[in-house]
Structure formats: C-alpha cells, structure tokens
Amino acid sequence: MPRNTTKAVIVVAHQGRPLTASVTAPRALAIAGEWDQIIQMWLHGRPESTVAVYTPEIEAFRRRVPGKRLAEVTLLDLQNWAVDLAKQKPRTVARKLSTIKSLLSFAHRAGVIPLNVGAVLRAPKIPSDLAEKILPETAIQKLIRSGADKRDNAMLRLMYVSGIRASEVAGLRWVDCQSRWGGGQITVLGKGNKTRSIKVSRESWAALMEIKPRKAQPEDPVFVSRWGKAFDRTGINVVVAAAAARAGLEAHHVSPHWLRHAHATHSLDRGAPLLLIQQTLGHASLATTQKYLHAHPEDSSSRFLKA
Image (cartoon, helix red, strand yellow):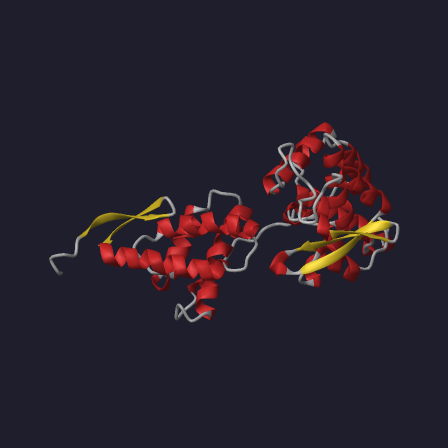
C-alpha cells in the first residue's frame, strides 16, 4: 500500500450522515461519489414528494452496506436488510425494500451494474386495507363542512370532487383554474409529469372563487397558509386531520388520500364508467382503478344464494 494512502475506520460525510467503513480514503470517497451520481440519475425528473420519500430510505440502506459500491451489493445484503426491518409494519417494510429494488433495477437498465440482485428479493405480502379507508358520503360531507375556514372547506371539497392528490393540491396555481360551463376546470401535474384536466362542480368552483384574492396573479398558489406561503403536503395533511377531528372521525386517522378513495368509490356507486374514473384520478393502469371494485363491490354473486 502506498505510504500516502491511509487505511483505517474512516467517516465519509454524505448529506450530513456519516458512512463508516474500514476502507482506504480514496476508495471511500470514490464509492460515495458513485452512489451520489447513480441516485441523482435515478431520481431525475421525479416529483419532489417522491424524492422526499425515497431519499431517506436509500440513505438508510447505504449505511447498512458501508464501503460497498452499488455493483457490489449482494442478495444477502438485501436479505439481511429485510431481516433488520422485520419488526416494522409489513407496508413499511415493503416500501423500503421496493425503494432499493427500484434503484437496483434502474442501475441495471442503465448499464451501471451487471446484475440486478434485487429482482429476486421477495417483498412481504401486504393485505389490502383499502376497504377500511373508504368513508360513506355522509361522513365525507361532514368532513368537508368541518374545515376551520372557507379556505379549508374549499380545499377539502376540491380534493373530494376532483380526486386529486395532496401534492397536486399543493402545486395548483390560479392559472390552472379556468371557468367552464357554469362550473370550472382545473389542470394538475400528476405522477410522471403528466398533466390532466378535471371538470369541477358549480359549488366547488364557487367555493374556489370565494377565496381567490382580488389581486391574485396567475402563478400564485391557490391555497396559501395564514403567512401567505403555498401549502405543502404536510400542511394539507394537517388541514385534513384537523377537520376529521372536528367531524368526530379522528379515530380513523383520515389523510388526504382518503378523499381520493372516496371520490373513486362514490363515483362507482353512482354509475361512473371505470375508464372515466381512471382518467380523472390519473392512474397509469386500469388495474389500479379496478381495486375499488374489490374493496367496495356494488354487486356480488352472494345475492343469488339463500342461507
């Protein structure tokens, strides 16, 4: 080993998190840089909300395999990681494992690693709890009326009638809102940077126009905090949770996505075509929308039986 090359237990700083490994300093720095570059390519073009979820999961795994290049990660590393996570909820474990599997798949497709060991890693099966997250129309209407003020009521109403995600609510600007046919239309940027336009009811449009400032500029956010700043996902979660508590629904741990579930289910109940619901919600696959049929069936063969 050259005299000017140190070998010891070193700490490589990465975004404020130390990676400790018994490797040479130049190699450790090269490994950290390689991980950073691959992760940056993998996250390129993804929504900020997705980046915020993926980044801490990947960093936690990196600390689990110090001193290893991504191409040196083995199936045993992934399985040991799964064992470490075993005490957490199955849905949490599945999310964390799917994140590293996604990174490895990307790196393999990009030709950065020769073998994708994540492809053979088994993720835990998650029982569907979708049915538990579907509130009846009466509960949704009570939730909408339980906002702290007109802004919150307009936000809750819009999320229900349009089925948009919390991140899409946060990104909504006045330029995205257009008057149409007595009601209105909003255009949102969804997953995969795909835009879609959604017609909203006369009542929902009126609620939006009521909170619109007289001097609002086209690029101003539709929903702002009391300090005039655009809402983020956390703030929207707070609004929904507070309204749920006032409506007596706090035991259900209601989140913004529950309004999206309600939109899909109640639309199906009222006869909306499945394809139209898919387009409104921005699902990439019809199979995703079809989950609502299983979670809240309108009909079943049980009605043909007597018991």
